[in-house]
Amino acid sequence: MSEKDLSREEREKNAKWYVVHTYSGHENKVKANLEKMVENRGMRDDIFEVVVPTEEYIDAKSDKKTIKERKKFPGYVLVKMIINDESWYLVRNTRGVTGFVGPSSKPIPLTDEEVKALGVAKKAKVIESDLKVGEAVKIKSGPFENFAGNIDSINLEKQKAKVFVSMFGRETLVELELDQIEKI
Image (cartoon, one colour):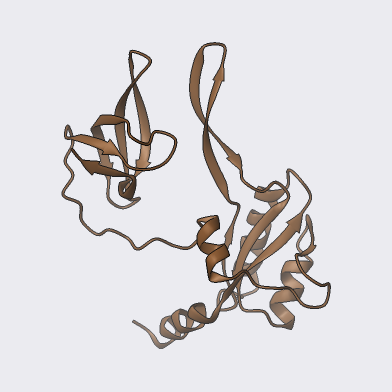
């Protein structure tokens, strides 16, 4: 591990999450613009992550139930960063950003409890899993909680599994995080 990587990791431990207000519907554009500006201006040691919190829901239109994703907080983007004049200026002047949440001169970071409740804190990666393709599993959390199914495929790199779940008399393929399922 290089010295620069170590200092970046140490700096990231000191970074806090801030809420940035955007024009409604522009959250993904703001995320892309901000990430590009961070890369172009070499600000990777001050701005670490940009997240648009989303949630899955079941859409039941015209007798078809489909899983869709929607923004949890339209008009808001979360940024993990170390606040200094340069990083504040970069975020504040990104196209589509209307400002930080908090008093105009000093953005207020989210508390650890708020970050955990929003679900943006990085989960510890499971390096290996004892789950196997074809195995019966129970879903522990999410919209399909308490459903049972069979694993179709596992992607350890992304920490996801595709599981066939029996719903409404039909097998439906759903993608889940590995920590959402357990062996039966």
